[in-house]
Image 1 (cartoon, rainbow, N blue to C red):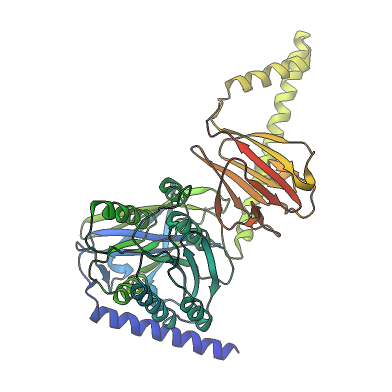
Image 2: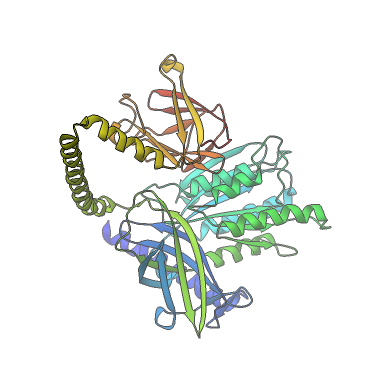
Length: 491
């Protein structure tokens, strides 16, 4: 089995290299060598001991520059304030990696039957060119949003799913469709490739009453972004209103680290082929940060490229949660320092208390009052940070239990272990560290922390980060909680 797997992996690499070489000769969007004018980070993915970065180096025409090596580039990286080391740099096609594709398909009547058939043909060709390491999922959006096929590498299954698609809906929930595709892209399934992309063809129109708004999608793209490669489609003539919708679609694509093309007269099959070539012609950079701690915090990663006296730079915000095994080993080594710090604080605390007792003995002043005054003084000096007041009320079988009122400043964790969470429960179906609530401005989000039984919102399991609305019902284990909050910040 191992020998067969190695042969298949080798054939996959040869196929990808063949496609790549053909692209060099046939595509007008690839430059061999050339002067770098733009550095564009597409995606960054934290692993146990490094960060995998996918990027493009573009010339003045926004064409990808191929044939570069690390020796001819001055490439440096910083994670927050810390300098990192560039461990590796190579074209993506020379790696043994796959890609997790999310096909986001508009099933409204924006496209004619013939145009929709061409789009299905283009996706079928794409699926047929997938390697054994690639995976793909299919999400449709129209009057509703559905994951019609979860990630799979089975080309036969994917083709059947695509063949069954048809344009039948009268309304379009583009924004919710993008949100669902981003959630799929953030999945941490161990068998999925680290590289994730969303591919969609759309006119950019969002006409569903009460649907998600543009700012909600942009908020999801602020961290852990998943690149969206969008094809802007319109039926002539191009009016100002149509262009306005297309501009929003382009903004989503660029903010995500992806790309946008306004198709004009380009055939649909050719447009999809160009997008796939663009994805495969990226570079992969391995960034090693020895002092990085995978503690779930959001940190800014910045890469700088120097060529011929010109310095290019681009950055991306990512949450430091390692996806690969081995992260716990690194955290364990850091844990020794935490123990030393705690011991040091205990010693200092003991000395302070001893000092207070000595002063109290000399002045006949009660020790308890001296310590109380010191503690109250420290509390007065502590600034009050802004947050959102939230209330979690048990419902369902948990109805009647005590409600919880908290102030969400940046992050609140929920779980079974009291010492590790801001809010703990005795429910044995809840994981030790189950989920977290986070705040961005006046928005509240929930994220499952790889719990054993998952996190549900209004009966639907969530993956990645999910925005909460006032009145939503959260289910963790056997516990149901209705969340209520006012978006106004309090101090």
